[in-house]
Image 1 (tube, helix red, strand yellow):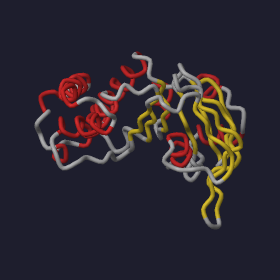
Image 2 (image 1 turned 120 degrees about the horizontal axis):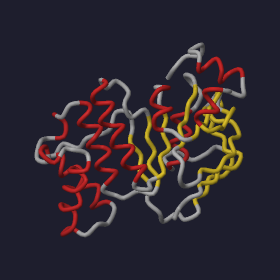
Image 3 (image 1 turned 90 degrees about the vertical axis):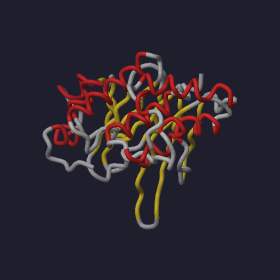
Image 4 (image 1 turned 180 degrees about the horizontal axis):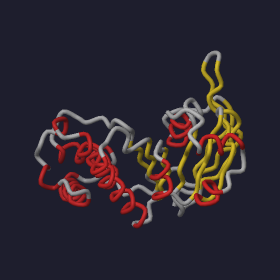
Length: 232
């Protein structure tokens, strides 16, 4: 088990601007964690730091076991110029899965998100919602202990959003830790157990979902819930 994930006084800066400012927190297994915050709060950068795509400018990030599996799905997932099935088998190959097992695992993953009938369709001709489900299937096939999701339903219609949320709930039910950023407050309530609220690069508040929305502890969080702070 790779959790908990420890962040100790983590900062990230670019010339002229500090994006993440001395965040300390521990991400535990179990409850789904939803990252909320206004435009420029640092949500995307924080997730990339946790996933290991960025290195902190200061502070320390440490997993309990660096050998565990984690995955990240972005708002606009990158699709390879090959079939839906091949997109997954390629990822499995990178993860060291033996060749004889890749196609079976990939088909199981496609089945889990309702895309088995499109296995041999070029990934780049799929609809936006289908591509997002394929990205989730690619993650599913790796059996991650932690799944980072950055705005997974942005720009999708309500039907596609429901399909993606169903897949996310299946991950959660299977024991995968969900860490997700969303601009949709209803979605945060539906999928989250706790909220990490960022304001100007700092962790301003951490609370269970109901407490956060009913009794926000900071003026910034209250303004955000009312729609008085801009979205990403």
